[in-house]
Each structure stands twice: as structure tokens, then as C-alpha cells.
Amino acid sequence: MVKRILFSALAFTATLLAQGNPDWHRAIPGFKIAGNLYYVGTADLAVYLINTPQGNILINSNFEEDVPTIRASIEKLGFKYSDTKILLISHAHGDHDAATGVIKKDTGAKLMVMDADVADEESTARGRPGAKVDRVLHDGDTVELGGSKLTARLTPGHTKGCTTWTMQVQDGGRTLNAVIIGSPNVNNGYILVGNTQYPQIAEDYVKPFPVLKSLPCDLFLGAHGAYFGMLAKLEKMKPGVNPFIDPSGYREYVAEREKTFRNEWEREKKNPGSRMGQK
Ligand SMILES: [Zn+2]
Image (cartoon, rainbow, N blue to C red):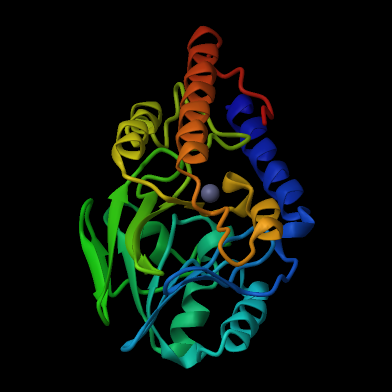
């Protein structure tokens, strides 16, 4: 019991420390990634806009304090915030979904969430958005608007309904496969062995890797800019050069994350309850 409280305290401390990451709330100008796919998030918390003739899809809301930044990026790109028709999330953690209720209220967008994250999305517990989910998604479901189609892939572990979004983007006569990774990461304070609240957590964490490896990927993207080196790639972007087209970077990232997860799992199997603030 004491251990459990200690781990909860550590998890809470880790959250507080992470909220100190200045890139989480630092505004950067929105930009076009490719075709009708745009980045309208902060310097690290990724928000994607898919522009269609029937309105826009947004993936992720970030924290409530980030909404004015997201809105400004949308409008500076020439779109209307009020044209947000569908709101999706990478997974039910506050850095990606705390403001879903606010954006829903502002725009009337329909919120669509993977089945296993719905309870956390609708929860009114501290830090949860308490947002009503309009459509419950299942692995492989598609979300369509104005000729654009996204596919929801269940990549659980990080949260029970953690979702990787894929879509095809038409860009300069080419078709590019975009993959927006939900998260394959084991956060500080997570317990992989003997987790009473999420007993199958480690078995779930295994599942995303074959899925991610099977996906065709040209545009390597994710819930945090840090997953795919967003800021460095943005600096290198120029006409005719799109560093976000990075299939080998994608494969390397997935392989490295799988190795890191498996190492951590093995370590915890040998020392259950030993997890302490590992990055
Ligand atoms: Zn998360």
C-alpha cells in the first residue's frame, strides 16, 4: 500500500515536471505538412488539421490554455476554427485531450474516440475533459469528411484506447501515406508488472509494434513533435524538400521504442515494483 502511494506520488510529480516542459505551451506558426494536412499544435503538443470542402477535422485538443494558440494557427493558415466538424484524439491524456470539451462547445464538432478510451474521455475526474463522445470507434474504423478518410488503429498500452491515425494525402501528384503515432512510450511512474488498475498493460504494450511495422509510412508524425523531430524537420523544410517524408526514420523509431519497452518489461519482471522515474 505504501508502495502504491509512493508510485502515485511519483507519477504525479512526473506529470508536474513534464508540465514544466516549455515546448508544451510554446506557440509556433501553423504550417502545411503535405496536401490538405496541416500542423496547428504547439512546439511539442501536436494538433493536426485536415482541411476538406466540407469542413475540417482536428486531431488532439491539448490543454485548455493551448486552445487560443491552436485557434490562431488555424486562422493564420486561412481556415476557420468554427469549421471544425470532427474532433479526434491520439489518446486520453490531458496533454492531448483536456480541451476536447472546450473545442466541442466552441465549434459544435463531433467527438470520436476509440472504445477503450471513451470512459476516460467522458470522465469528470480532475484533469479529464468530461466531454461527451458522439461516436465510439473500434480498431480499423474510418472517419470520413469531404473526400478525406482517416483510419483509426488501436495501439494500446500507453492508454487502453491509444489510437494511431493513418490517412493518404494527395500532394503534388503523389499519394503519401501519413502515420500519426498515438504513443508507444512507457511514462514515468507506469507499472508494467502487477498493475492492479490495468492488469493487461504489458500485454497491451506488445500489440502496437506489429501494427506500426505493418503500416505503409511516408509522412512520419505523432502525438508529440518530439517523437519525429518536428522542430528540426520544420527548419529544414523548403520548396521541393519535405523532411516529414521520412519512412526510414519511422521504422527506426518504432524499432527503438519496441526495444526500450521490452527492456523495461524484462527489468520489471526481474524486480517487480522497482520502476522509479526511468525516462
Ligand atoms: Zn500520453
